[in-house]
Image 1 (tube, each protein chain N blue to C red):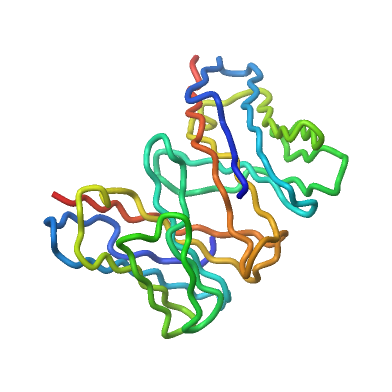
Image 2 (cartoon, each protein chain N blue to C red):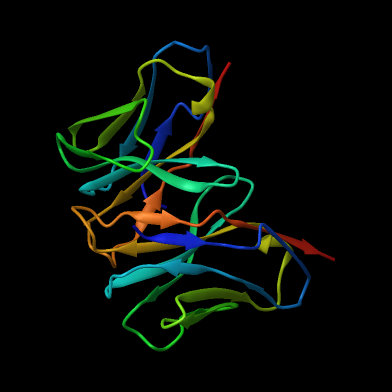
Length: 116
Length: 114
């Protein structure tokens, strides 16, 4: 079974600074996707960024980028120029091809605090 | 925003009572999922559906049942609610079961069992 580990329960960053959230995963599959979801206090799950395992190039979406190390099974999220609106819970998730439906497996989450 | 509506949004119920949560989608997506979110556990899959009347168990399915009689509706039932089922429940939908298909989430239902 696939597992996703987020070892940082809480992180803090000052506004305009850069922060990196860590995520490691375990799988024996070769075809999979990795995701970062943001959950603000509204509880809505918002997709921030995704990475296909076959792509060597790291995904980037505006201020959000990932460092995908496939051999190390590591998938960290970097947030540049942090803003107050970035404060939220962030979940790393894995989606593979096993079974009838490709189910998402989530990490336990990292709560990000943004300070002035 | 994807057309996903969960109802109710909040519910308080007593131990031992049956509870049904509803997920309604207007996207005609084939796959639907129920997750529960608990502190320290992230989101964990309860049950999922890959078509009308086609459902299967997730990793935390004990005490839960589901039904899908129409493409747009996926119901989660707690036959006899327990305090351990106090949680936030999320419905998600996906057009296909493919690994590259994005999943969209509902707003969540906060269930408290007293």
